[in-house]
Image (cartoon, rainbow, N blue to C red):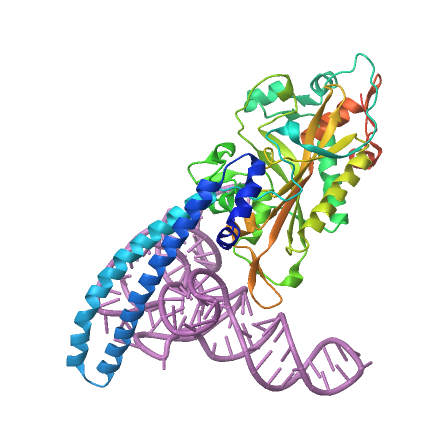
Length: 423
RNA sequence: GGAGGAAUGGCAGAGUGGUCGAAUGCGGCAGUCUUGAAAACUGUUGAGGGUCACACCUCCGGGGGUUCGAAUCCCUCUUCCUCCGCCA
């Protein structure tokens, strides 16, 4: 969530910047300002009352000690009115503070100046493109047919066991999946990210910390019995490692990587564009997460983009990078780059990575701070990105590397797979 | 599942009704010494709100209660530890 102080000091700038998301934040921002003022007024009054009653209590203490019980009893009688006052004021204060929080949660992050104006994915800005799109035979198949032909992914079996969107990977398909995970983790470790294994279920506070709750509650699977949520991305458990932490400046940069399955309800539409591996309820992903000093975070974001680029280059997949426009930008993000791989057989781009800087938006919810040079605590910046989401990488490999003799495995993966072709 | 114990500042750990926001150690920061570093020594150092700055207020796992006054007493929830049972 946004920082109150920022809203107080740069109200107009924030409202203007949020127009990039095609929303009029003015009513919400004004409401925040009004509630904040009311909260502070109540606080001041309550503080004065409490100060008075604290003072009296101390007097009573000293009077008792010096044996003047009678005088003490006289003062005692004066405290009851103060007590009642502070109780009612405290209740009003709590209620106002709660209202204030609720309005604050409804305001999305302020987009970075470089974020283009726009309302949908049409308006995203392509900033980079690399790799040649292969010319396939006329009988080139989409990945779901290749998966069937070579018997490496069984979608129907997943339906039997669980339901739609939970595929079963078989034989070389399963092996390739495992190879990709190992390869990604190795690349990330090489680049200085520390590998972590984290829980796949998180509590409410964690979902809240990274912004999945309460805004997008419908997207996560909820285990009602224990009130836990299946993670939609490793971002949630990994970033929440730092919830309620106060760091030293020399702790930066913090770079973590984690492989986890990801679970998403996304009760979306059916059709060609969600066929096969394009959209699933459960999929695997390797994530990178960074916690940075505010002055370093955009340099870190660039570094993450270069890192993902290098991986795609090694995999020899044709890809492009988009800078998301305001309308497509996630609620909590200030700047996001999406990576898309070209799916030759489907003749469209598939998102395989999303790299974002959240600035202080998550840190404010997480209470993730560091001590600055002057010993004051300030909010850190959080970032994360996929490196990478497995299903669409797999789809890209299957489709782009298909030959009449089978699927050719990208060279970097051969040591991990133990085979050169799927046939 | 049964029986006990515990939760305090960045960390460790004292404190069992009245200047306790809290001893002490470690860590952090600043300085002395040193060519530099380490060590040693000296000083400093909890978080949040509020204020131009003070004052002042809140916070000792969460919530509620007793009391003029609670880290300290009571209730409740959560978490952790030890022992027993069960299980991987």
